[in-house]
Length: 229
Image (cartoon, rainbow, N blue to C red; front, side, top):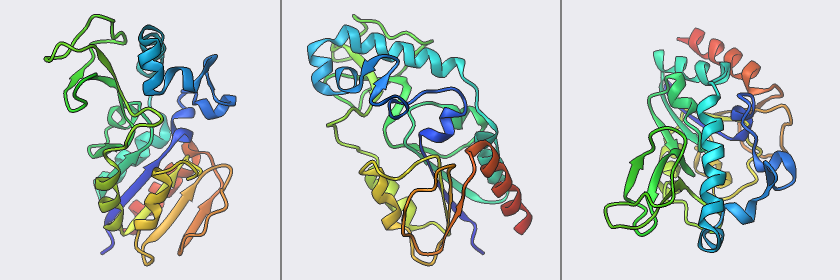
C-alpha cells in the first residue's frame, strides 16, 4: 500500500496565515531590502538591524495561527506516514500538530551560535537581544539559513523525497534552489500533486495540478486521501 507521503511546503501556505514573504513585495520584507537583512554580510555590517528585523518577524510568527491547510496536513498522520519538508522558517506546521517536520531553511523560534551553527537554543518569546551569547561566548543569531549560506538539511530531505509514494507540493513555485531540485529525487512512479493558485510550468511525471489556494486545496485533497484507506 502506498502510505508514505512527503509534503514540500513553501511561502504560499504561510501567507494564508498572514505571514508576508519577500517575494510578495519585490524583494522587500516590511520595507527592508532582503540583502540588507538576510545575508552573512548584512550580519557582519549591521547585526543590530538584522537582529531587530528578525525579532519583528518572530513576533509576527508567534502572533499568527495555523490555517486549515496546516491542520489538514496534520490530520493525514491518522492513516499515513507523513513527512513535511518546509522552506518556511515559521513553526505553524508543528503548532497544527504535524509530528515530523524538516525545516530546510531553519526555524525562527530558535537561535544559533555565530561561531558554531550546530549550537542551537530555544528563544523564550519573540525577542533575541544583542549581548545574549552561546556557550562559546559568541553572539546568538537567528537560526535561519541566509542567502549565500549552505542548506545543511538538503541532503536528508533528498533521501526522504526518494522514498515518497505520494509527493505533495503546496504553496511553492519550485524556482528557488536547492529546494526546487528536491522533486528530481522523487520516483517517476510516485503520485505527485501540486496545489497552488498559480500553477507553475513544471514537468513532473504523474503530476496532478490543483489550482487552489492551500486552505482550500489541501483540506479537499486530505479528505480524498483519507477516504482511500
